[in-house]
Length: 220
Ligand SMILES: *Cc1c(COP(=O)(O)O)cnc(C)c1O
Image (tube, rainbow, N blue to C red):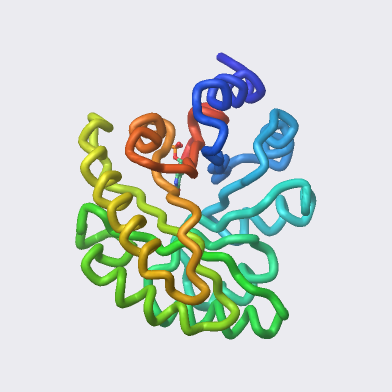
């Protein structure tokens, strides 16, 4: 099996320089995360607050920390001070709590709006047709800065099937960029995982979230 360093080297060599890699670190140890940072990755994605608290405290500002899991509202007070970006904002209620806690910390929180691009009833994310209204509401919150969109897409055996959802999310990204709303700067389009990041980049992603292909197989 390849080392983390080899995996990161291979990924960084095959993607355009403007694409940011978020190492999706759920279930990984501080030592593994340190290895990823030493190999040249600057952004670490965490799904679970409890798991990330220890790692972020240990590693601190050597990396940028993105929350990429679903957020329970009662966890926001712990997430805001720890993280540099929340990629999974999908309701005005969640955004309002993030804003309130951010005020308390004298911080402006960078967020991405999560799009439920395949319109799956059991999935998180705002429906594509409701995203514009959501962004128009969130952009009135002073301590939140919307920096782009994120999508997961459905679980499919063939990642080629994700292409259409990536393409539709990129179209929304361009539409929202042209709205020129206050506190909205459409900079990052976060889509693509280990089996789909090359397809996502072809469809306009400039941020990819990669776990297994960096760290190897995981238990959960
Ligand atoms: C785990 C995870 C990833 C990475 O998944 P891999 O298939 O291991 O690359 C990306 N995004 C989110 C939100 C995740 O939870």
